[in-house]
Amino acid sequence: MKKRLLSGIQPSGTIHLGNYFGAIKQFVEMQDEYDSFVFIADFHALTTIQDKEVLKSNILDVAMDYLACGLDPEKVCLFRQSSIPEVAELTWYFNCITTMPFLERATSYKDANQKAKDVTVGLFDYPILMASDILIQDADIVPVGADQKQHVEYARDIAQKFNNIYGETFKLPEVKIIKEVAIVPGIDGRKMSKSYKNTIPLFGTDEEIKKAVMSIVTDSKTPEESKDPEKCNIFSLHKLFLKGDELNNLRKRYIDGGLGYKESKDILLNEIINFISPMREKRKVYEKDEDRVIKILEEGASKVRIETEKKINFIRTQIGINI
Ligand code: TRP
Image (tube, rainbow, N blue to C red):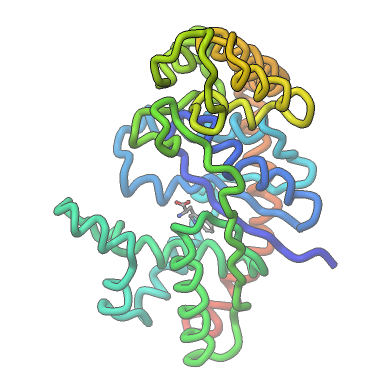
């Protein structure tokens, strides 16, 4: 039997090349190996997004992004977290066995606190909600970015504590760190990240992508001068798209001189547009048919609901409120 994989994705707006090559690609590749459950973490998003129109469109956007990137609803159960309100119920049960000092050690909370933001109870409780997501589905394996590792460890600790108090109820999940196979540089050479505003959008218009590519920072060498490809931000991005001879030929042109940065950017722009064009076509189909996206999410939810209801009933029995 295949192991059960579960992961949540935040509906946090436009995705970029860094997201794709850093994580989404691997995520899509895992769908064959595991019995996969992927959900859009809209309950978690409420800790940061309080505009209903923004939240609604972000939810559909992230669903379309992942579908367009190759997540296959035939293989993966894709659903909204809020379609399974039992996770909120389970969060309460876990709240009642979790101490404040234990949660105060969570880096997500510490970070927010340090930035002197007003920390809501929801943000403080974030790791518990995440533990509920994971444990209610009996997940074997939880692929996440390194920043989420501690949260999966929380889920294990909470499962263990619950099992100790009420008897064997939850499986202990394993974390699988999605390593950033490629650190994708942004247009300023720092890691591509929304917070640095240096991204190249994955599903932007040609104009948006062009604007980003043309603003990639370079030194001021003339086209004739020899250039070091390994020190060039444009070249680092070429590496994502070109392999073998194609890459070597370009490398040689850098070293020999005669290739200007403008030309290198034009070539890169072409590579990007060619690469994303099939995904873009796929996304357009979903954009035109939002109902189909909603249906995919609904079907995903109905599949998980059957088991989740059984599980929550068992949990209620374990804690003594299922009379
Ligand atoms: N907190 C995760 C993130 O920000 C999203 C998430 C919510 C999640 N619940 C989860 C990931 C359960 C894995 C399992 O990326």
